[in-house]
Image (cartoon, rainbow, N blue to C red; front, side, top):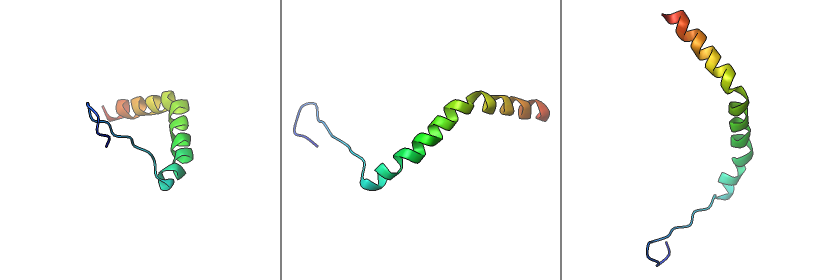
Length: 50
């Protein structure tokens, strides 16, 4: 915390957190690429439950 008005805090990832950047980024990319397929599968499932 810095003694400023308004107060300011700087955050940074630990070394362990940095190790997650690549796998979490890959998961995000997969989600972006497959958004439509997931929505279609969800809609299909929902229609079968009705």
